[in-house]
Length: 141
Length: 122
Image (cartoon, rainbow over all chains, first blue to last red; front, side, top):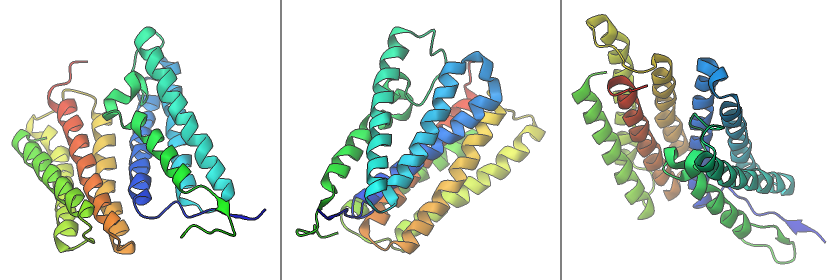
């Protein structure tokens, strides 16, 4: 069955993309600084920061780029982010020794006004709203 | 960093951000007032770059990591131009909201820079 994937860069989705781009920029800037400054202090936390930054960049691109393949990439990266913020959020509370330094996901994203916790949920709602539909019933894309 | 200038800059970025976000949610397209406010936020950031380059020569030095401070300042200075370009390309009301989000993000980053410069404990 042919399906159409509606554009994800439309309406309020554009604000979502802008916030994703900002978070990607913030996470990248911070992790570049952390890797340059003192990587040895908290290698696990800093490596994770860098990984998170890359995933935010890919998620931003996946939200902008059209087509079904990027739609899947968007789901994978956004799910990864939600998992990351939940797992690291819990670990940073119960095992502060593993996370002595702040990452974008520490304390459920408290250092970023909990944006990293809320954003993947909004992203999933948006992806569901713009999900691929049968071509016979095109959603006004 | 000059304390009063930084606070004034944070207030301008907050007002510009809330104004654009409110107008965007009310359905206004990007206009002179919202684009101009975002441009003002950028001009103040460029002034902050000059101030922060010169300040150490006058004995006004950062208490925290200078590298971290500059990563924040340079990143912040990239945001308003990107938002303005976005507003010129995409003339929908959501661009006005994007301008607001950009200025609010700059305000938060300025507050972080303020902390790094003046009240770093580590």
